[in-house]
Image (cartoon, rainbow, N blue to C red; front, side):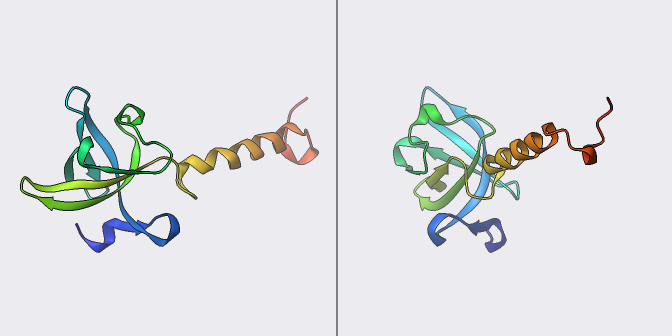
Length: 115
């Protein structure tokens, strides 16, 4: 993993950014794809969970995650997984969109509504 794949996480810690590509429910394992396209597998029982989502059942394919990696006897693996909204991420953008929609509903003359 290169330094440009990592970005600041909560409390100054650093996580690589990616999305969950695949989840295997039976073995509670999966694959995370980094923003640069590298795929890193994980086994949930060997992962330290951070953030509001702490159970394997909380994870979904396509979910944005922060993660850290480590070397095992099987190669590079995810060792820490941050699952949940981050400050300034798309999880927070909904609040701004709701405020904008509320302001448009005020019906001021500048909003261009047709009567």
